[in-house]
Amino acid sequence: MDRQRTLLQMAQKMSAAIASEDWKALAAINTLMATVLPQMAAQGQWSGAERAALSALRQMHNEAVKRCDRATDDLARRLHDMQANKEGWLAYALENEQAESGIQA
Image 1 (cartoon, rainbow, N blue to C red):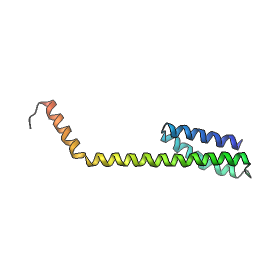
Image 2: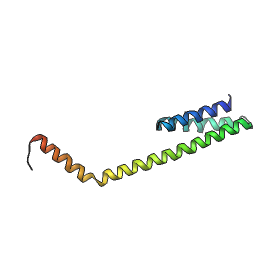
Image 3: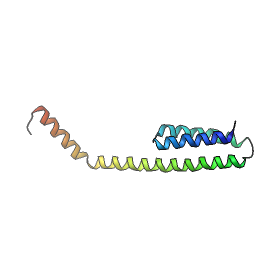
């Protein structure tokens, strides 16, 4: 197994998943890293090129964590806003339902 090539491929796949916000792909790559990296490390010393590729993968992983954190924060904010406006949404839905059925309140 060419460790350098494998590390660079994982970094490229992670970069593409980050760009497309493909959370399932990011989770799969993360799981793959947890399995493959210890196996790679067990093969012996890392060459300079392999260490550089590993560093690139680590940087990309850090970026993925930041993007996931931002997406989580955005979702939490939207859910909070929805909960805060729940009464308004319910009133709007009830008014629309009454208007469509011709029922006057």
